[in-house]
Amino acid sequence: MTMKTLSALLLMSAGLAACASASLDAGPARAVTQTGDAWFDGAQATLAQRKGVTHNTSKAKNVILFVADGMDPTTVAAARIYDGQSRGEEGEENLLSFERFPHLAMSKTYTTDTQVPDSAGTMTAMTTGYKTRSGMISVKKESPRGDCEASLAVHAPTFIEIAEQAGLATGVISTARLTHATPAATYAHVPDRDWESDAALPEGAYEAGCRDIASQLIDFPYGDGVDFAMGGGRGNFLPAEANDPEDEDRKGWRKDGRNLTAEWVAKSDKHAFVWNKAQFDAIDPAADPRVLGLFEGSHLEYEADRESDKGGEPSLEEMTRKAIDVLSRNDEGFVLMVEAGRVDHAHHGGNAARALMDAQEYAQAVAAAYDMTDPQDTLIIVTADHGHTLTFAGYPAKGNNILGLVKYAGEMMMAEDGKPYPTLGYANGPGSVYHEGVDHDERPIGDEATVSGVDYQQPSLVPTGSETHGGQDVTIYASGPDAYLFSGVVEQNYIFHVMMDALRLSPQAEK
Ligand SMILES: [Zn+2]
Image 1 (tube, helix red, strand yellow):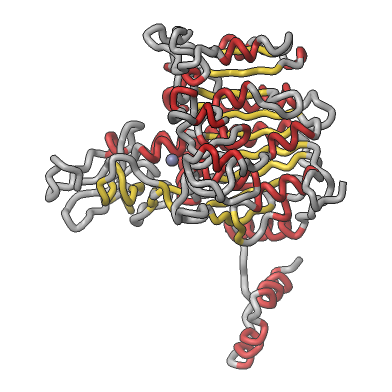
Image 2: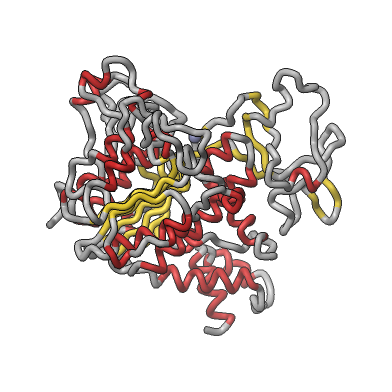
């Protein structure tokens, strides 16, 4: 294509043809020259690539739902720069693995009773197709939070339960406790997310028929049970009489005497329990195992701290690879949920560095899943449950350290108090100068090394002990069968309906 026709096409497509011909009457014609610019040429390449995107309408064999807890669009933008900079690039041009997916939509995350939601209500929307109240795990909105008896009548079936019943293999992975809200909403039904072990059930709830979250994973009544489950939270699976295998000073948290890890192993010859990296590495997918992996008493380590873990922990990418290796042996296909649970926890701590590092690891887990599966038959959905209050602001130069102080043209940018400030901050949280005991007139700010360090708590305005969630939309990225159905602004519970349609398990779908 010549430059002349190219420019004519661009003007036409921008609806500027009329202006262009008008300006030709005003003087001698000039040729527009557009050459040799990386972004200009990159946009042309993107245009050609987008025109080639087709709709995959075939049935999905497998569905993988990735959820990074609390990974809002601001976190994604900062993480992509962090990821590029960790390889020595300036970072802005970088894309995280899932940002290359062809289809995306914005997800409205509110719950039926809160404008800014929590992970229980939002994950229930994704796993069951019903929006519900915050704090409730796969229980419909008609039950009040914490009401055992009311909840029993309104359990919402989850995509993992439906898939098990249809003969698919199923898996659940999280870097948080396996009993924490996000993973729990794939396999358990409780009207209060805190009911992680029997010790947390309120009086009378057990007698009324309610069960704790951990026991519901082991007693899962659909198909042949969840096939692959990995994360943290051993305490909720071990009785108070048992010592934790990794930390001898620690006991289990259960009061009913049940050792759920032993019960898992007793289910069949194929059932195995692992709690450290060496055991994880020894899992042989060819033996078609059913694996429960619990690598920490509570949540797993942040990616930043994983190397120093006593017993050793697999990374989110390693767990994802192992899960796909195991589950893909089922000819009927599989469904898998993978959660990066601690992006959220780092944000709650006002600690952007660990949030970005966990988001980076999440992107690597998605890349692994994409590589190991066929995009023709595997629907991969990558999203978050809700946002946080991270801000990415000031006027830093391109390539400025995303975790550093704002600098432009080699100069430190100063706020009105004559002090520098970092690019990343939070609207509220532990980094506020308005906490009691802090001199409100003296905004504390560290030097570049402190601010860009892994432990730094970014400044915030409102003093809250824990930084809060945000109510902004989060992005849904998708690849594979039915991925094209993600476009526009959608309610979060729509995700379930697309997964079921892709698998032809929806009541409305053609079988
Ligand atoms: Zn949270």
